[in-house]
Image (cartoon, rainbow, N blue to C red; front, top):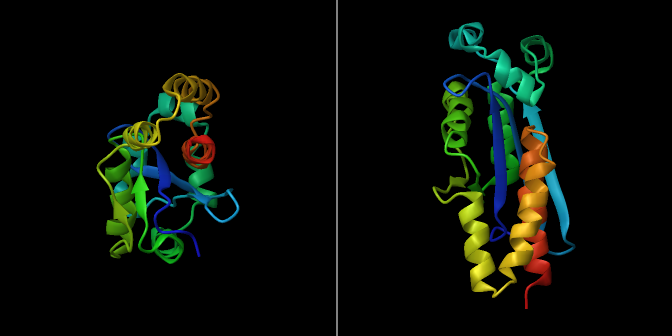
Length: 176
């Protein structure tokens, strides 16, 4: 079982900024061995979402996920909500985007299930900044790592969440 004090970083990809969630991913550092635990799922759209009406080809170009792919490989929202509740119960989740909380809510509302974890309003970036300050970590080194991570982003849910977990590991492992 993961340390409940270790934050979980999550990310969502969507059909468009005002559309529906199509992928969710999360990552956290297991404190006992520093291993990053990560997972992601394509989201099978609910029929009532009428996702075709809010599908943005520019968003598809950014994340590389097609409507056909989520239609055939997507997991039902109930299964995703149950998997997240089972693996993340009692944890605190953080994201780097204000859109992600609404997209995550679509999964749980669509499934008719309450999350067993807490989604925090503080962004992943703000959490890392606070941790850097609390630990008197070299802020220049943190900024360099963050800039490097941003350049290598793939805009996929698990990969984006994993970047934040890697930064968390770097900060907590190397801070005095």
